[in-house]
Structure formats: C-alpha cells, structure tokens
Length: 232
Image (tube, rainbow, N blue to C red; front, side, top):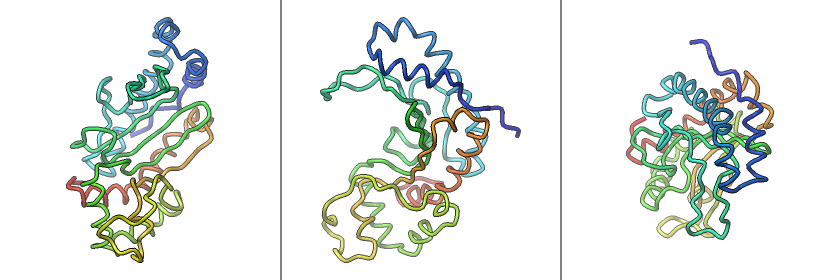
C-alpha cells in the first residue's frame, strides 16, 4: 500500500508552541478549532497510516483512532496530585499498544511530538510489580533469548541499547547480586527510544522512519509480550 501520510504540518508545532505560552483554559477554548484542525486531524491521519503497517509486525498491536481511549493520548493533564497545575500537555503522544492492554503501562510502540523534541520507539513503561517481576524472571530463565533481543541486528543498529530509564539502586530481592544481567534486573521499565530532529516529523520520510523504528523494537516487544501473558 502506498503511504498517504506526508508528514505532520508545521502548524502542529506552531500550536504546541503557542500553547506552551498560553497554557490555560481560556486560551485553549478560544483556539479549540485550531487544535482540531492543526493537531487532531493530522495525528488521526498518522494513526490510520500506522494501522496499515502494524499487521506486518504483529496482529496484536493496535492503531486506534478513537478520541477517548485510542492511540492518541489526551491533551488534558492529570493535575490532581501535582504541584504543576497547567491543564494541558504541551506535546502529542501516540501509543500503539497491545489489543489486550488497558493503559499506557502496556507493551506498545510510541511516538512523541513536541517543538523541541521528537522521539520514537517502544517497549513497556512502568509496568506494575507482578508484570515487572515476570519480565525479570524471563531474563533469568531465558538468558539466551534475552541476549538475542539485545543482539538483534536491527535493534542494535537503530537504538544501540535499551533506554537508560529509571532503575533500582540495588538488585531486587530474590535475584543474584552478581547476575550477568544485574543491570537489566534493576530496570523499572524496558524501552528503546531514538530522539530525532523535530523537523523530521514534517517530512514525508517520517513514516518510513517510524516503520524502521517499530521494526527494530519489535523483538523487544515480542519478548515482553510472550513472558507477561500477551500473545504477539
């Protein structure tokens, strides 16, 4: 299928830049139609195009164009427990997660867009403790399989290594302190991310970059899914 997505419009970043200077409900409500036209519409076009590609990697990963609960994250920030009371996110996030997943802490591919930072990749971010321990157990019980993920040609060439992420200071209880994968057993999440020049998102070549990234991170997602009860 010929790609129809030709890159994001520059107006998407212009809107986000303006929002960062006017992060309040009055400004957003006055510019809501601009948000719909310059942000939501092209993002939905992007999600649709990704949906044509995902089945080549896994039929379990979903591109969902629903406005609520779909692949595009809500623009509204959860400020209930934060000192930062700005009501809106100043970036666009898209997660293409597993069909059985319920939230952002599920195996999935990810695209992040802001005027100053664009990154793409995937994995599993901040899973709950039982899920995290299943991944750790899988690394211990299937070390050659885990090493195959890390050594995968596409993965290592594109990402280099797993993202640094948050880690425990000590190896978790129940695992050997001198285990060959001790550094990975300390991880709180398992993701691979590549940062790009924001201008790249405006290019017709951006979809090609996304496909390359998703293909490269797919072995990591497959490992995580298999060992946490998700078919891949």
